[in-house]
Length: 83
Image (cartoon, rainbow, N blue to C red):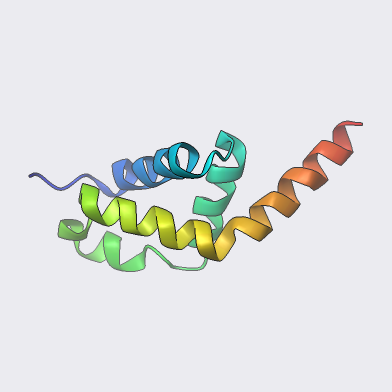
């Protein structure tokens, strides 16, 4: 199986978070962006062979576990601003 590009991998992780955990697109994107800012994916950029579907499933689980509270807090704050 051919590795994904770094960007494809991030997209796949985001999609998997929405599908597996019932999280909205915006919250999943926030989680992945926060993880990226924290250099969670730094090894992926250095070694493209890491960007495989199996790893995307693992990364989705790990990102969700680590960043779910921050994303949910951000979503609530965004919703409050709209009111």
